[in-house]
Image 1 (cartoon, rainbow, N blue to C red):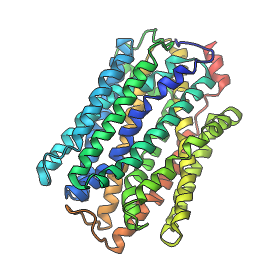
Image 2: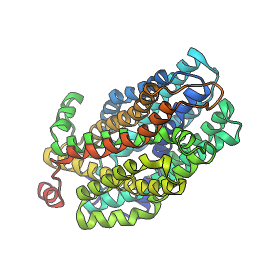
Image 3: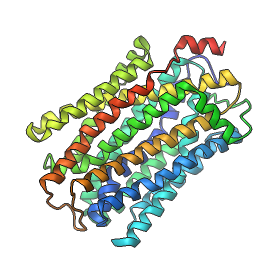
Image 4: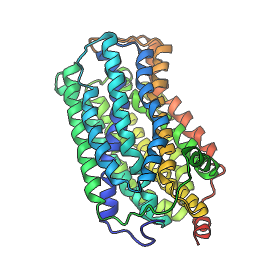
Length: 441
């Protein structure tokens, strides 16, 4: 079924990982800046802004499994990477083009632009995520692939997430600043797309084998895979928790840390920077203790750190940044182990059924992840609305003590509960190296 059972040449994981520049940029910047852009630049009420952020990505929940089916039947992944990825870059810039400055026209424009961008992203992301299960049959090589991928993902999040607010501020803030930011992120996406397309040109990718005769039949097979189902639900709920925290970065820095200018950038650097340093550590944990235990350890680290940040209003800012770095270490482990366990689930299904359906599995996976990432800003927007956050067309305005409390709780307690609570869904996960070897023999 797959390309190799041995060690992959370094150029393969390195080339594959470059695609995370695209997924990281698109997965980060809208979650970080789109909600504040809607509420504090276009003057759209928080509740409506939450709907606008959620609805286009909810479309992907329906679309991604279909895209997976299409790429399975095509028998190749790379052409989708190029076409979908380049379209993604162009359309991303369009989201923040700002032809309408406020009101219903502005809201409708952003909703439509985000919808088309999310569609292009599906045609890039689903085939991209499907590739690891077809690059190697090795349990340990899949962890190596994900270690490379998450390292580049961290770079993408750091570069796009940390620099995007800086570019907005340096370019005059408002609509003009967001336009320049959109062009910058579009360029990062394009570099990632071209990098993975060229970098995997000679990869030992193999997608031979039959598939189920219909999308419905494939979805039934995916649903019957207990390990996949539990891992999926856990990852989706955790994605919502992570996205809730990302959506609150700008608000937390402004209204809790009282540092609107540099606070978001420093928070982002503290969150993502450690990931570049701890990849070897998490790889070693996976080798010694297994992927499942590593996932639980890293998730617990994330949740504990988020809960500690509840004390942010009464501790020095340096303590907040140090705790954020601990959260970042946990986040890196979550991504490595969750994404390394996914191709194990796909390989188990392929060995058990003899059918090629990696695209549908990853279509369902990315649909769920997209839903989780979209729910985060939507949930955070609801929290803001409930606690009385006031929107504005002229930048940040002073908020009530109740609104500031909502900003704090949405950034700390809510992500902690979601990330820790999601671990209960992994109780039935049992794909050990021994079980995989047995079914593949």
